[in-house]
Each structure stands twice: as C-alpha cells, then as structure tokens.
Amino acid sequence: MEAISLRCGALHAEVLPAAGGGLGRLDWQRGGATHALLRPWIRTDDAPPTTSQLACFPLVPWSNRIDPEGFVFEGRRIALAPNRPGEPCPIHGDGWQHPWSVAARSATGVSLLLDRRGGARDASPFASPFSSPFSYVAHLRYALTDCALQVTLEVTNTGPARLPFGLGLHPWLERREGVTLRARARGTWTRDPRGLPADEIDLPPEWDFAAGRPLPPAPVDHAFCGWDGRAEVHWPDTGVSLAIEADMDYYILYAPAGRDFFCFEPVDHAVNAHNLPRGAARNGLTTLAPGQTLSRRVVFRVRGES
Image (tube, rainbow, N blue to C red; front, side):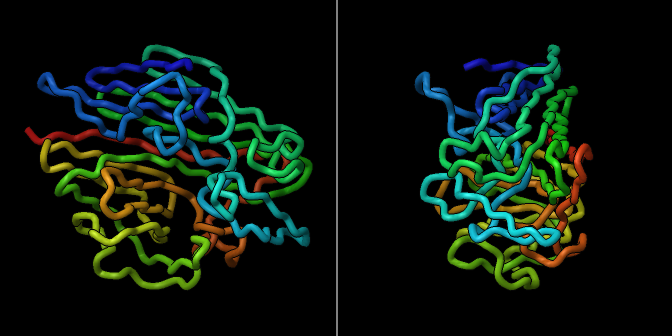
C-alpha cells in the first residue's frame, strides 16, 4: 500500500490514499523524542488498515449514523443500506470505503480525489446495489507547516437533484493516564439502542469540558452541539497538547471505558441530522444543488510545555 510521507519542521504525517484517504500517523519530534499527536497505525502485515486502525479518516458525504429506515427530503423518501458488518445503520458516509487518487503532492502536502459520480450504481462491498442516492466528487487536502496540519475536505454534488450533505473528520487519539479534553458545548442527546439520538439534553456535569477535564471513566459515545470550533487535548505525562480548530458546530466524543484510545470528531451536523428538524441550530446539514460545493477545514496544532 502506498504511504505518502509529509514533513515540515518537526512534524511528520503519513497519508494512505488507498485506505479511504486516511492518515496513518501524525507525529511531532522534540528533544530526540517522537510524540504521537494522533494514534499511529501499527503496521503488522501487508493487510490494509481498517478505519479503527487509522490515525484519522474523512467523513463524506455524511458523518456517523442515519436511521436505516431512511429520511424524507423534498417529498422523496431516501433509504441507505447498512455499510459496516454488525452495524444496523449506515455509518460515516462511504468515502472511507473507497481508495482515493493522488491529484498533487509536494514534500509538505498532498491533494487527494475521490470520484463517486454515479455512486448509486457503485455501492460499497457491504451495501445493497443501488443503495446510495449520493453522487459526488470529493477533494481532501493535507498540508503541513512547522507546527500544524491543516486538513481541507470538499464535496461537490454531481447528482441530478438537491440533497443534504455533511462532512467531518474521525481522528483517533491515545488515551493515556491523566489526558484531558477542553471543548465547549451547549448540549447533547441521549441515545437509543441503535446509537441514534433520542432526546436533546443539557450537558451532564461530567461531560462539561469547557474548562478542560479528564475523560470520564464511564463510556461516552455521543454528539455535542453548540461547539465553538475550538478544542485542546493535553497529555500531562509529556507536556504535549494538541489544539483542534474547525469551522464546524458539532463534535462527537467516542471514549469507550478501559481502552487505550478515544476519538474527538469535528463534524458539521448532528447524528441522524437527516431526520432532525431543519435549521442550523438542530440540523447542520447543507443542501447542495447539482454542481454546488461544500468545504470544511480542520487544523491540528501542536503545543509543548517548555
């Protein structure tokens, strides 16, 4: 599998176009030590990594779950088949299930392309034929500077009709003792047994990360609304912090109990937003007419204690 190595200053990233356009690693070198800013993919054989082994992967043309019964948009009922074994809902779009091609590259950056025009006639291996109404072209750009990785994700509707689109990123981070998260939010949702949102609620105290706090010991797998687009993860054992900046209003925190990882996912819409009332406060999706483009940006910026 092709791995594209990017370097700028003390930062090193590895991009895996064939693995859903994902990242294999993002590292920072300081004082002779290498610090994993995102949990790295540990290559053990020639098999390609799964999304749960990547450091990060793109979410396009939606994030997280959609009700398997589908949704109604402008008078049409649209249903998508589940696309991951053991998961009852279609999840994370389908960009992660296809190889991306390299459009341009340099020592510090790479641009990837995914052409899913006519996507409804080219379903993923886990989906039923003709299961997806989304026809699109996506661009994914990784660019390193001395202290940051900028990720830009774009999607253009190439289908014949208007549809709601959404974007996000799915980073995986190391959960070591004492790690803290700072991220403001207004509220969250309870979950039904399928992982879909039920009732919108105020933040429980243990999930209020506005001032920065350790991850709770109990599992978390929830979407948070009213995010200001700024977050910071801090590992006190190394003094390293990773600031996350995004032009998005939601994030998903996936922190299973007793595991050595967690996920902080910047996204621009709520879980199952396709079935929530429309409007930026509750939905977050962007309706694209044929030919229109949606673009989102996430910056990962490293900080270290002196």
